[in-house]
Length: 199
Image (cartoon, rainbow, N blue to C red):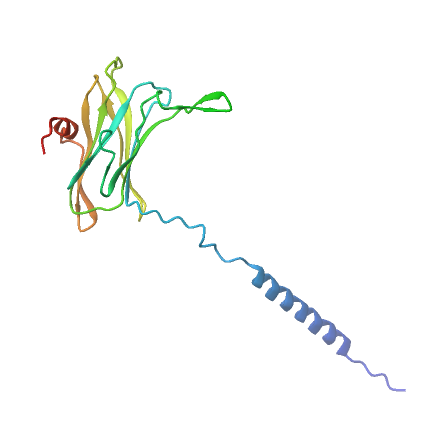
C-alpha cells in the first residue's frame, strides 16, 4: 500500500495566518488617528515683549514700546498693531475674590503684543513707576520673542536705581520684515517725551 504525504494542511495554516496578520495590520493602520489640526494655535501676534520682576514685589513697573508710528504704555494701551495686554501694578492688582475667599496671584508681569512689523525703529523701555522706591539695582527681566518662526530676539535684566527712572532695555530696526541692528547701549526717553507731548 502506498502512503501519500502532503504539505497541504501546513500551507493552508500558513496562508490563514498570513491573511489574519494582514487583516490586523490593515485594521490597525485604519485606526491610527491623524494629527488633529483643530488644536493648532495660530496667533496673529508677530512679536511679544515681556517684562517680569520679583513675584512678591509690591513695586509698580511699566513697559513702554515705541514702533515706527506709535507709542504704547499705561496711558495709551493700544495703538494700531501694538497693544499693552497687561498693566501690572505690583501687588495692587494681583488679588481676586472667589466665594468670599481672597487670593493673591504671586506674579508681576507685563506684556506688549505686536501684530505687524512695519519697517523702522522699535524701542522697548521700562519705567519704575513707584514713587516710594528704596531698593538698589532692582532687576526687571525683559524678553522679546518673535512668534513665527519662534526665536528669542533679546532677553536680559534691566536694573533700576531710583523712583520714576526710565531705561531703554533694547532697540532694533526692522527691514523687510527682518529684525536687525539689536542695540542695548543707546538710551531713549520715550515715556518722558510722551508726557511732555514731544513727538
